[in-house]
Length: 128
Image 1 (cartoon, helix red, strand yellow):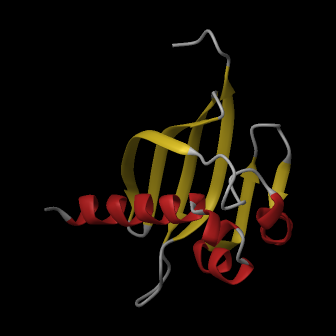
Image 2 (cartoon, one colour):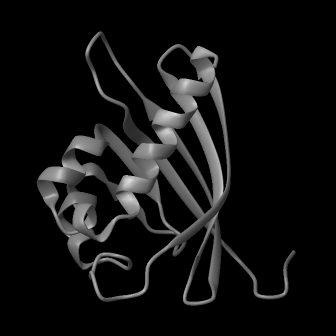
């Protein structure tokens, strides 16, 4: 197994943790996975900062334990530079699809992988 594969797998594991309702509803757990310089452009087109996302995440889609969850598929990843991984994948939630792209970075020895950037693009129902 290559180092690149390990890095991509670690980023995918972080991405999956961020979809877990127990993480989405816990600011302290989410904080561990989001880089302090985090920015997101959501499927709605809204731009989210680190502080805005941490404040809103417990109320956003996919957070309630009993509610509908994101179903991810087709993960692909590439190491862009040491400590920087780009992931792409697709999610479905209640029949709505989105294509997603995120950057994960790890800064320094002993650091953990954190999401630095995320973007979601809605997929129209009739698209392949």
